[in-house]
Length: 151
Ligand SMILES: [Zn+2]
Ligand SMILES: [Zn+2]
Ligand SMILES: [Zn+2]
Image 1 (tube, rainbow, N blue to C red):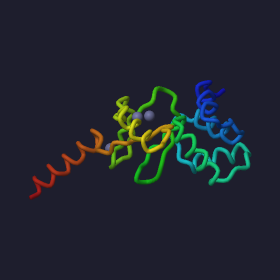
Image 2: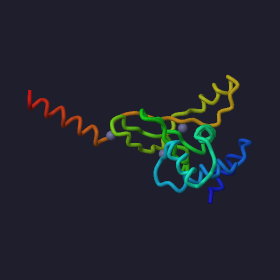
Image 3: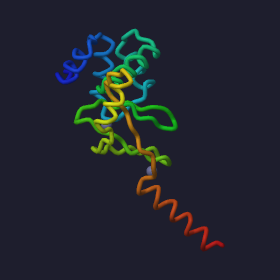
Image 4: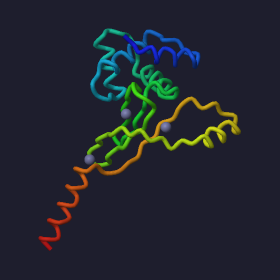
């Protein structure tokens, strides 16, 4: 079953829960991990739903724009996460692509005022902070230390 919150959000923005959207969201709901569009597409094929990869991308884009799904941009491509909790953002490790959810959101009301002035009605946003996780930092430090010993 889909979260009622998702249905409310779709309706509020004037979108219907098409069979394709429902199936995409269900695949994401069932999955314990974040998925790529390709992986979602493969799951849909396994369910014998006739849908093109292009349609999957288009729907993910829409769901992400209205804040039902969060797109996380990695160097290797994009991952999609169903927004089940409160609005939040992500830390991404540039070495191992580990992802951590953080609750802080830097988007201030002034952004929305500016957007309003530009004639935009803002639906949602994505934000990733790129860095190195603890493990990768220790590994780098170790490598640096080893190099020093050799020198
Ligand atoms: Zn890492
Ligand atoms: Zn998250
Ligand atoms: Zn935010």
